[in-house]
Length: 221
Ligand code: DC
Image (cartoon, rainbow, N blue to C red; front, top):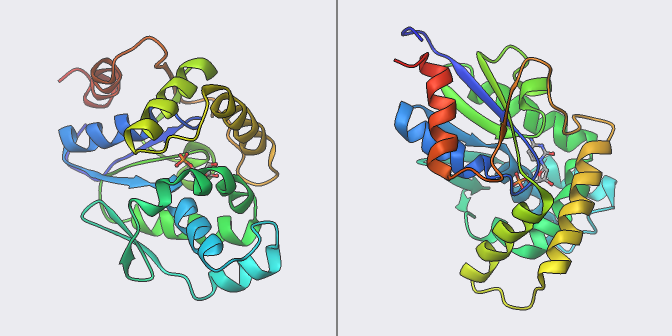
């Protein structure tokens, strides 16, 4: 790794641990972290707040025209307001796959993501980063974990947030449903690019996963 700007793409299914890992890698390498899932979530939050049906593509597309998303100091801003907590609510998680399927949404966010990565070193996580957003990324990782492990993590996360009316079984079902939609949509599906390193976090600690990435990026230096 020399002094020029570089990019790290991290893709993988929901609750694989990629956001936690990417955030820590960004701190250790002192580069910017861009959470693209948060951007899809912010649009979903706005759609739901405006009582728009996520399946109503025309209304969602209209709403997009007056929607601004930005990251400042690791917080996500939706039309000038921080929505870090709101976008993590279960109702947003359960609807975001429908919004992320819409071509106009993806076109707008992919452009914005490419713009954000143009002038600095970044680590960006999502589903289509290594394949569509940054096909020329310097390093690509595909982070995965078993469905059971991912459901357990999501369950714990929701309990920690005080959301009590959920069963582990319903979370497993949600994860399977979201994987299905994310992997089979027409545009920018979740797919491992051939040139990515695979990181299975099922029985790895966060620290081990972070170290795995840092060792590859720094070449062990
Ligand atoms: O990583 P996450 O769970 O916060 O992502 C939320 C949703 O957004 C998920 O259903 C997949 C979608 N997404 C996407 O389609 N493309 C991305 N680059 C990032 C997320």
